[in-house]
Amino acid sequence: MHQNDRGIKQGDRLLKMQGKLDRGPVEFKSHIVAQEGEIMAIATQDVVSAQPTQTIIAAVEQMTSCGFRRLPITDAGTHKLRGIITSGDIINFMGGGDKYQLVKVRHGGNLIPAVNESVRTIMTQQPETLAHDARISDAVEMILKKKIGGIPIVDKDGVLSGIVTERDVLRVLGAERSRLHVEDVMSSSLRVTAPDCPIATVTRDMTKYRFRRLPVVSDEVLYGIVTATDIMRYLGSREVFSRMTTGNVAEVTGIPVRALITRELTTTTPEKNVNEAAREMLDKNIGALPVIEDSRLIGLVTEFDLVRAFAAG
Image (tube, rainbow, N blue to C red; front, side, top):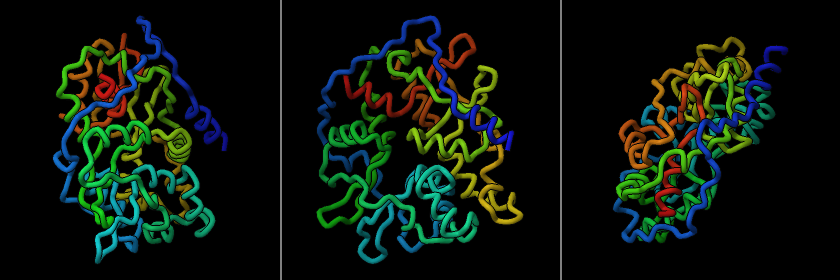
């Protein structure tokens, strides 16, 4: 219990590092980019989806194997959109929020029967959608206002036609040359966690603050980044089951978050142009870059930050 308490304290730190430069808030213009054109031109049209009756574990395995952060849920016959499941829903279910009640209350903490419930029990119902004839500017506005990373596209009958993501939008907007630098758009007040912090604490922090990722910091040095996708992959790869003896969820969420950090870490610097940062994210298929100055973590720049910056002009 003592170690867990220490982990919770370590996982609830707010890092405020200003570095050498003045990094006050940036005032963005209020207009949204007036990019014309149908959304289907940049969307993924051949969309993989799941049925509401599919099990949670099957949906998570599908997302893991395909490298998806979200999976639309559709009726088998009509292909009408019924909901969406995201990596955020998975960390909520794993112990982050209200969807954890399925594990804790209905199944007494036993993860195995819980993951075999149907995906409709934890999916986000009635998700935000776009019409198939929407403009790119409509997608930008929804991403910025609703702070969502992917939007299903439906036709007039509610049938799933495609999906558009922050990354799709960033690929278009990032083609416009900007004079902004990473330091102008990054977040410099960061909630961070520690390598020995338990996964359960990380899922709670991510759900509470609506974060998709948390920098992992040890003695003020960046150790890595843990993402909602990393935690989802932990479940979807079935590694979690190899750690079980009783089946209780605490066995798999009590391990330190450092066990999930395996990927090579890509960072950036505050003076880098935002176009370069966008290219790096797109080339490496990553959603955020830690910002390093004098070997210290001073900020984080995400796809959302860059979409907002390019949209502001």
